[in-house]
Image (cartoon, rainbow, N blue to C red; front, side, top):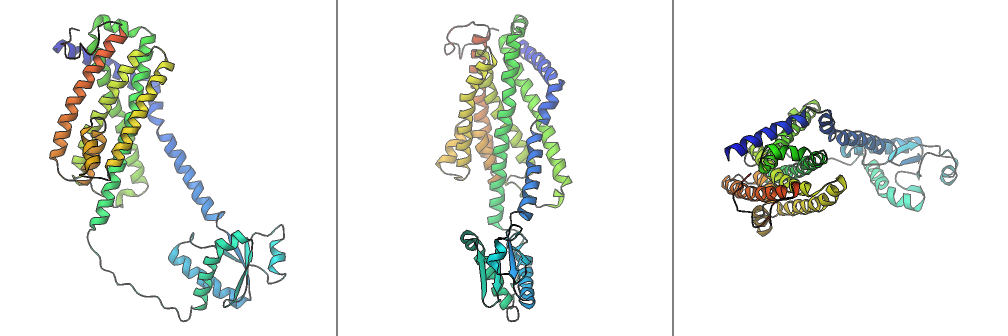
Length: 396
């Protein structure tokens, strides 16, 4: 047994060095950041478009004193409600008639408000009138009541904390943790397949199997990819934290998980390792049965779809703390890591996590054992029926 673990560490060091020190690993680390940057740029363009082009412009064809009252009311309302809450307003000549002005090719307004503040008339297409009538009625009412309208002062009573806001914030932390764990697990576990198929194609597996036990190859590859995943998480986490500080987030009020940030982060690492090991073992077993990349993709899809269903199950369970769905998701080994990290964000009890970690560790050992048998059988085309060998001691 000691020799097998020593050989597994050698394989792990070999695979870890070969992956981390390669040029493609740098591209792999930068890959997830590109969609985020593109999304931020796209969000910036979307905000710019919504603030300039998408707000309709209404022409004001009223006498100067009436137009001033409307503009003053519009300014007071947008000061309270925000620039995007109401339509934009622009003065237009009172002649010719609004219908004639809207028919011009160079008209930049979608509708024209004429008449007086007390009796406004809105001219435009039916669908535009339906969209604008409420806003303009509010503005005209505020303009008409500007001399008599008095703002009601709301008395403030501040509290240090709010249980409802705290619970909502912790729920959001749990959801974010689930999503991050799921995507990291899927993203990083997929590297095992491509690495294994490449080595099978180049006959490297046969060379390794001649020198070390097959079980050591399986465990070594699993440990190497787990260590490599922590390198990726450290890089992405450090980059996200740096962006957070650069955007001025150091003064933002971030909700605190129920168990506290140190314990929560430690549990996140443990649960990610459990989820990754479970999925990685399955992927290694799949990769051992595939000879080409096409076969890998064919076999990979059912596992990925199954993992997505498990993730949806865990996401559903987070809204039913202490009830049957949440308990079932916590017991089912594949959904347990995602469910328990969400529980850590909402409940400060630690003993359920100790039980969950022990249960997950036992199941991880079982899955690794099954994966080793499948790996040995299909990589070297040896061995009998795997379920008969499941609890038989390994002979190397």
